[in-house]
Length: 241
Image 1 (cartoon, rainbow, N blue to C red):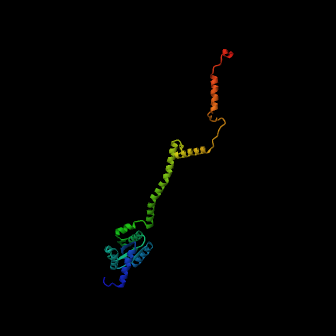
Image 2: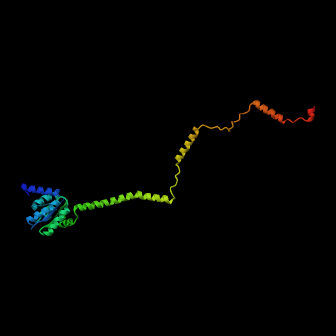
Image 3: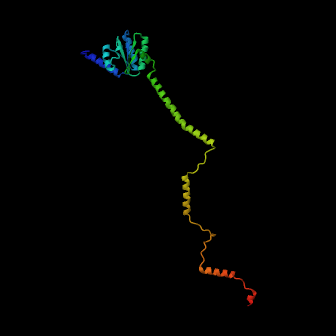
């Protein structure tokens, strides 16, 4: 479009910015809806984070091509409105679907979910999903369940080990006395040796002193006594003489 008017440039910039910032952009055809019905639809979508806007298809096409190339072109025919979603896309899709059931003039066409192009069938499936809060709760529960189970197993391990150890002790007839370690025995012996070395020796009265070797005079007297004892006694005739 050559030399576009500033108003059109502003609209293109606005649409491009909203497409970039939105979590989803759902396109619908509103042919046949009255101004009052459109106002009612806008009022219902606003609390869920939906903003219902109507632009010219040519300007939307220019803005969309700067964001997702020409992937939205097939939906930009006939009177088209865009619902920009910032928040729960499933809740907004459900509101659009429910309103379309009561007002057949509103037709789901397709749009964007993030950067992915979705069809009218995809919007119907999106509307069947639970609300975002419910999905987050379900996800948290799914993530928490394995952690709770793991915590229970970790708590059961020491308890089961204690039960098994007690059963093994009972089976063997009670705890067996433990022998002192070799190092402990060596320390006890060393202590006893040191204690014995420090105590003074006690001499009892009955103990005999070691015999001293006899001197030379004592040895000669002993020899004379021995010779006298061994000499034969004199006979009577010898005594008379």
